[in-house]
Length: 283
Image: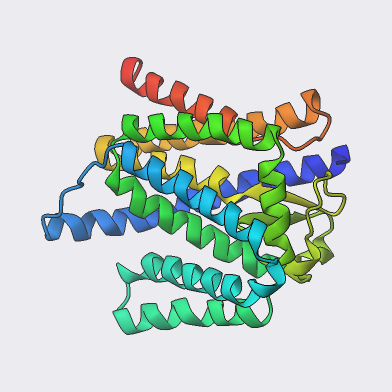
């Protein structure tokens, strides 16, 4: 990856994270009012069950993609993504507009994406998906519980990239014109290109940079968790540390790895851990 592309991808990635944080905060504020009015209390899940779900899903997905040609899964994957996009947009609007309007606003963009999955639309829908996931799951976890989850996923992320599983999985999914990641083009004109042009073959992409959905979703969940447990000001601090962590991932990739693919979750998790410690002992 050339330095200019890395430079551009860095700023787009930061913009994606900050935009997702703003939307997640908006949803969370609406959630909080709804939960308080209905006296709904967070169950504060333990870390065990989410880990079981995560690793089971990763294993099952890998087995399915290994045994079944992606060409046979294209339609299923596309409609699955469309459903997830619709769900996320519905969550984003459900607390602020009437239900019929929220359903309409959720269904139309997903249907457009099925017919014409251009990169800019895909990335906008990914922002809504990650923000909704952060707002929903952030309510379900205590901050330190989710921090443990993030650290375990960080170790998995290192192993998955080191042994090639992550790139293989992303490459397989990109063959089906679906990708659980943000696609950042090199040129502005490429934002209107079809998602199917963003292929991953195990090498560094020359035309597109890929930012994993989890690299945005996980720090969002932690930030929202801090919001519900410690308030908006502390959540802003945690959001700032998330940005530092993502910036650190790009710095490592550019200056230490010369543009080679790297797991972003470890530096993000490290920055978030420092953020939690700062909130606990210094603020």
